[in-house]
Length: 112
Image (cartoon, rainbow, N blue to C red; front, side, top):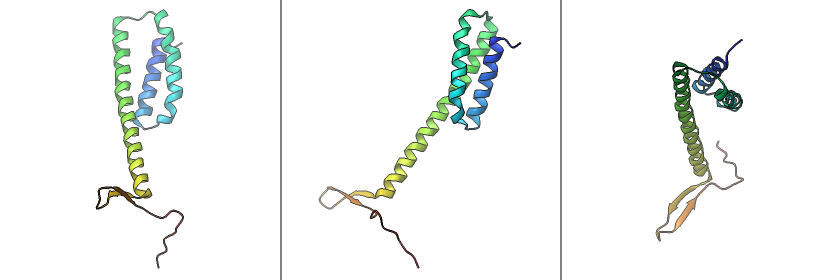
C-alpha cells in the first residue's frame, strides 16, 4: 500500500505532466485530490529529507503553474485586441476627439 507521501508525490508528478502538456482543464481535479492529501499531512510522520523532496516538487509545480497562468493571461489579452480590431479602429480625428472607423455590423463583403 502506498504511503501518503508516495501518493502525494505521484499526484504532483501527474500535475507536472498536465502542466507541461498544456492540459490545464484537468488541474481542478488534481487540486482537489492534492488538498485532501495535504490536509492529512500533519498527522503523518515525515523526515527532513522527505519534507525537502516534497517542498521541491511543490515549488517546481508552482513555477509551472505561474507560467501557465501567464500564458492564459497573454492569450486573453491577444483575443481582446483581436476582438477590438474586428469591431473597428479607434483613432483621433482632426479636432482631437475619438473617432471609430469600423466595420458595419450585419454586412457581408462580396468579392468577385
